[in-house]
Image (cartoon, rainbow, N blue to C red; front, side, top):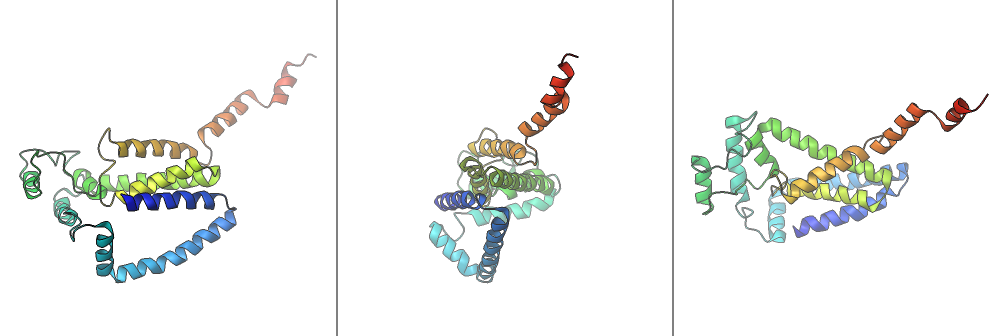
Length: 231
């Protein structure tokens, strides 16, 4: 969580600076960043084993990421059994289910409840199938893009904060499940950001559309004065 917080803070400050640039300058900076990032990602892919060991060392985790890789492998084995629509919303981790009971016993979960696959997308694919997982990915990426559009138009710290929040949720989605549980803080943050970004990130936000609608209905002020002026 410390690494995610540092990355989100860097994104917050960087996006505030980028949002204040002119459109051409912003595109130039983003292009330069992409050109610098792609070779780095290629090197990480070529040295995946060393990169994994380095990440594990930095995070202070075991080689299995505290059992996460075991859970991920098990999830990938279970998804093909109900690949399209999944096992059902919150229908997998139930008591007296042989597979769930086996995982609880393996990881010493005495309460036999409240467990997960430690990956938001794999959890969604198990419960809702690849269709539900795809809809979740589309919702998260759309919210991130609309938050970016809002921040570049608004150029405020608040809008960039929503960008950092969405990026934080996306990073944590790789190793945690934050937004699939009702009444959780992750779900609340996601839906609040989605509602804000879905309106403010549009080409014509709600308040602008309402102003145009009222002007169209009432007419410009000069026309109104002319209609009510005495002959």
